[in-house]
Amino acid sequence: MPRPILATISVPAMQHNLATVAARLREQARALRRDAPRIWAVIKAHAYGHGLAQGLAGFAAADGLAMLDLDEARACREAGWRGPILLLEGFFEFEDLYEVDTLRLTVAVHCEEQLSMLEAAAPAQPISVNLKLNGGMNRLGFLPEQADAAWQRLQALQARGVVAEPGTMMHFSRADDDPVVTAFQLSGFLDVTRTMGGPVSVCNSAATLTDGLWARLPAGREQWVRPGICLYGASPFAGRSPESLGLKPAMTLEARIISVQECRAGDSVGYGHLFTAERPTRVGVVACGYADGYPRHAGTGTPVTVAGHPTRLLGRVSMDMLAVDLTDIPAAGVGAPVVLWGEGGPSVDAVAEAAGTVGYELLCALAPRVPRKMIPASNAGTDFHWMQETTE
Ligand SMILES: Cc1ncc(COP(=O)(O)O)c(C=O)c1O
Image (cartoon, rainbow, N blue to C red; front, side):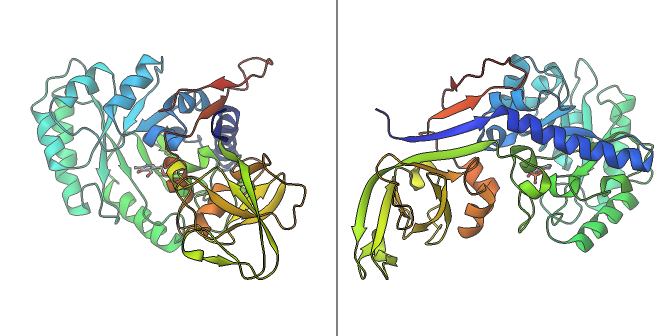
């Protein structure tokens, strides 16, 4: 029998989350009497750890898919995705432009070097480009004072038929926690791009879920949002649960109890003896550790659910195992089901918070050794079945 640990990836949950976000945007758009923005579903990092095939199935209704790598883009085309694909970091070498052209990709253009590579290119058809501006994150993009010159160079490339009508994009650095900084970054972007046309996209999940933020962009331009994490059912906001945003977890990590220890008051548990029992304590040992992607920095008190009962982690997470408190769950013994995060257990955000990180990291860090099952798309027929997925 394989080690009892399993990650279940729910395509219907992804479909639900995309539909929830789209409905919310449509509702706002109706109230404002304008068109709702289109949605780039962000599927980088193997669809935030859920698997590219699952992302493709879950977001088949998106207007476009955004990712990082040519490999991912090629896999999407091979899987039959005909819609727009946005490479969020653009291309890395001149040779990449051949595939950008043949795969009909939209690329972010964020630096001088990329502009120079485009100026040396002769693609078979005009390449779709989004000029990426640095709104204050200082990661990628042209500064406000560089933007006009970059835009002029793209205009010249458009006149030569090397690029299609350029668009513009920006990425907020604090959309999840600081509306004042976000409003400032947006105003700066609007100022710099006032005379620029083409499609425009600025909103990640947090900004997409901040009512009306996207609507501050000029109505005359084709609008896109770029949500990622919320489509997987995790919250972009600290302290706001995914349920409160109408989201469902797309990944559920489950394991089983493989041993039970009856500890007396004064006994300690695990490496470093970080937990010492103050009363007689039943300790369940779970077949999940940091080599599975569970965060080692999660300490005593991290939420976990055993046989449907919320309880807590005890002591230090080890490579292949972790300990949980079964004292108040007397019926739970060896074989009892444990939900580490997801459906029927704590949210990945709650576990991440206890470990001093974010849900993004936990989802992306699910280890290759964890077997995965996929719940197929809800429109795949009523004959609900489990499908074994190959590990990516
Ligand atoms: C440029 C860009 N757009 C959109 C996203 C999606 O962000 P989120 O997952 O917070 O929605 C990311 C994620 O890092 C990104 O880098």
